[in-house]
Length: 194
Ligand code: DGU
Ligand code: CA
Ligand code: CA
Image 1 (cartoon, rainbow, N blue to C red):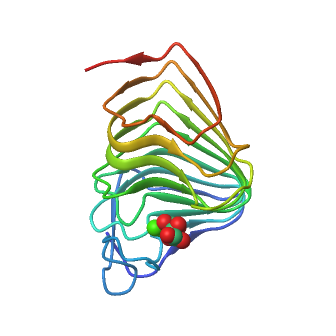
Image 2: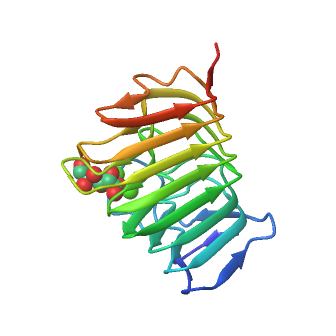
């Protein structure tokens, strides 16, 4: 279905897309290019859950999270400007699902946050996770049981000396520098493949 204005999932509510594909109206939400200031297809208020959604092209500015969020079994078929942005402090969990074909960023962290990515498939982007350039707030990234392939630059890039990443039981291939300027890295059970 075509989304003409951002779908807001209210605090504590669950939006179950039942496997349907949602695409942005390029005129009113965004064309999915690298232009900034596009709107999101979904806006998740604090404590919202988004599940069983396919984001088709154009995906505009994807999903915006304002606080805690659970994003379960969500598939980005063709990442727009980026796939998901943490806009306000919170704990965001992405479980299952996949994202691909990003020109630059997949997940963007614009506020102090915990971001957990579990059983996810991430392929073909500039970087999988970016803490907003020049920011020094503390962020914790946790990646588990995922498959990550073809990142031009990195899995996680930050400019913050205190931010950290933990990655476990994940397979990865061709991910650039892997950790770009990340000072605190903890890994176990990961496998690099060709
Ligand atoms: O280049 O603020 O990519 O939230 C600076 C910009 C950039 C953001 C970010 C986003 O960091 O636009 O989409
Ligand atoms: Ca951007
Ligand atoms: Ca963006």
